[in-house]
Structures are given as C-alpha cells and as structure tokens.
Length: 272
Image (cartoon, rainbow, N blue to C red; front, side, top):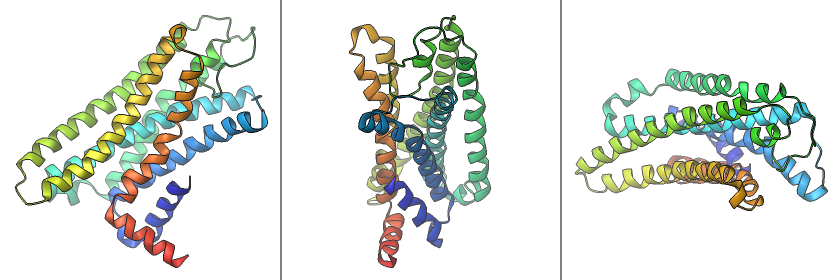
C-alpha cells in the first residue's frame, strides 16, 4: 500500500512523469490498491480478531471486485506490453501511437471489458438457493467456495467462471507473449553498444513479473481442481498470496527500477 501510494503521488507531482507510460503505471497501482483493500483487511480481521462473519451482499461485492480487478490487472499488463512493443519496435511512431488519448481509451477498455464479463459471476451465485451450512472453507469469498454451499446445480457457475477466466486471462497472456517475442526479435538486431542489455533488462523484469502473476493463477486453478489430493489450506494460502505479492512487487519492478521514477521519489522524499 505504501509503495503504490508513493508511486501515485510521485507521478502526480512530477511534471516530467506526465506521460502515457507512467499513466499506465498509475492505473496498475490503483488496481493493486483496490485489490488489497478488498481482500487483505478482512483476512487480517479473521486472523487477528477472529471476526469470521460476513454478509451475503458484502461477500458478493468482494467476489465481483476480485474477479473484475484481477482481470483488469492482466489486461493492463497486456496494454503495457504493447506500449513496450511500440517503444522498441517502432520508436519513431511511438509519440503518435501512445498518446494521452490512447491511455484514456485503454483505461476505458480495461474497465468496461472486464467489468461487464465478470458481472455475471456474483449474479449467478446470488441467484442460487442456499439451504446447507453457511460456512465458507476459505478466508476469501471466491465463486467456487460460495457456490458449493448451494443445494442447486452449480454447473453453470463453474462453466462460466472457467470460460470467462480462460477467455480474458488467456487472450491477455497470448498477446503479452506475442509482444515480447516481437521485442526480442527487434532487440537481437540492435547493434548499438549497451542498447540490447538495457532493453532486455527493462522488458525482462516486466515479463518475469507477468509470468509470476500468471503462474500463481495457474497453480491456484490446478490446486482447486485437485482439492482431494492437496491439503485444503494450500489453495487458500495461494489465494491470499496472489492478492498480496503482485501488488507488493509491481511498484518495485515497474517503478523503482525506472530511473525517472526513482529520481521523482528522491525529490518527493527531500520535500518531506
């Protein structure tokens, strides 16, 4: 929370950082902050104060925000990968393609696409008939954890969650891989001294972070599918870590490793 807030304040106060790339970083930080505020306070309340109860409306709201904002984060990674693709593969066209209007349109697309596609998830869960126990075997209101409490057929819920997840996250991941493969091909042709190392250093750290985000999500899906063979605490732990580690790493990898942002943070600290 501290790192993402510092990044947002730095980008807001430094005129030199009022550029499309840094606006995209701001969007990523906002998504991370909302995800943390949606999940972590309740998790801490459970562990610290044993406050385990949650209302149905609050649970469905948490479910919607988690589903929509996680896919929004994936989509933002995809837009940022495209930004790096244009910057490295078409540097002369970068100022005319990646503009403030492009960022606004990208932000609207990120929010609209993922908000609309994930809206049916809590709606489908709220329409189920709950007549069994009301104890969720999780510390987060996930769709599957809630649906399993229902006496109704939850095939539609499971199918929609599966199709939605792989459609949104899968398409983002494919486009990200394509962007970085084109970047790698272009970088191999760069002959200027140090240019290749600089490009690989920047894009490499970004790609590793995106790969980590996707890998944790994939492991989480696999552990949920193989619940009978895996201790029940494992998927719960992975669920919490998936909402905690990426927001902690994003401002470091994307922010502090960027020279201009590092200088902006130093100026901000001197003013304080």
